[in-house]
Amino acid sequence: MTAVPSAAAQVAEVGGRGPAAHDGTVDRAERALLGAGLLHPQQLRNLRWITPGDFGHPARAWLWRTLHQIPAKDVRPMAITEALAAADPGTRRILSPDQLALMVAECPSPGRAALYGGMVLEASLHRAVDRTGSDLRTRAAHAGADEAPQMVADALAAGRQLTGMGVRWATVPDPVRVLLETPGDRPSAPAPPLPRSRADRLAEEATVASLLAYPHQIRELGWLASADFTDPGHAAAFRAVERLAQCGAPVDPLTVAWESRRIGAPLDVEDLDRLHQAALPGQAEYAGRTVLANAALNRLDHAGVHVQQLAADSSLSAPALLTTSSGAIAPLETTHQRLLEMDTPARAHGAADISARTRTETEIDL
Image 1 (spheres, one colour):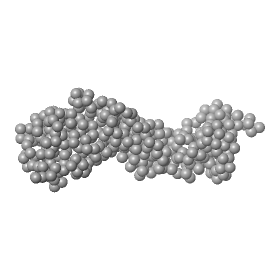
Image 2 (cartoon, helix red, strand yellow):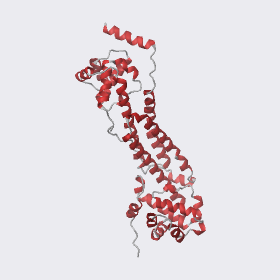
Image 3 (cartoon, helix red, strand yellow):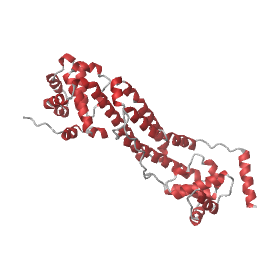
Image 4 (tube, helix red, strand yellow):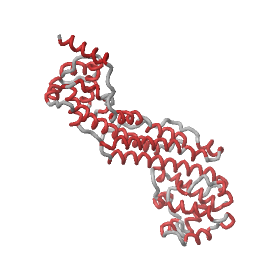
């Protein structure tokens, strides 16, 4: 008597990709669909909206493809066994006669193949979303600072592709979609706070130091934001310089330290003095580019983590998954626009604006 492998052993045998591949329920749904196809092959012609790639393992993909290649009247275990002669050894092992018989025996109801197929497609979409998140994280980890604009542009394209996957879901029969699109009882978790893996403290210091000594450079940094700095002190100093420049007030270590108290992040004036003394002219724009590029790659990594988190949430139906995961990438659009502005010559400020600032500073100096 042949021993029947446990459900856990079957999942381990199949392996699979992405978080859903390790879910025993997904594993059973795939086996039930294949079992239904073996039992009632005449319904296969109505299940072409499920593709071989929707299965979590190449062997199952091979079986689904083969079931559609063999005329329905000829589908039987022996025909599959004969076709397996041309398959690779791994596929032959996983789709042994015992395994085929087990798929048939485990199928709860062959007439519900479309419902099982909807489950398989939903799990496939979860895996696809997980791969997207993983790809975003890989790009963020290995890209150089000069590659940040292209990496963010690629991420936004990936987000649009996630939205486009809804076309696949629309091919599912209406009764099945009605059953599977029931909303979960709990909202999806927000993106977790993450430490920023990309940071260049020297670039941040150089940006702030140069602005302290040569504050007119702030006009060239309209694409940079305080949130781009990883160090809270550097972020506070940049924001203070921004606020002072906006109202035409003088910028020096003391005024910046004083203004930092207004934004709730008081800075030590002596620390600002040291930065001021180490300042180099013309460094703010050059170093600021590195600050923004690193911030962009950190946001790319964060988006990837959030997308993977959503992919692992089995309470999300396919439409909700695609919408929320695409939404997790969409905020990168603002960062992308600022990266593009960074490489665009700064627009000249109006003469009235410059003269107003100069007049204010002169009056205070007097």
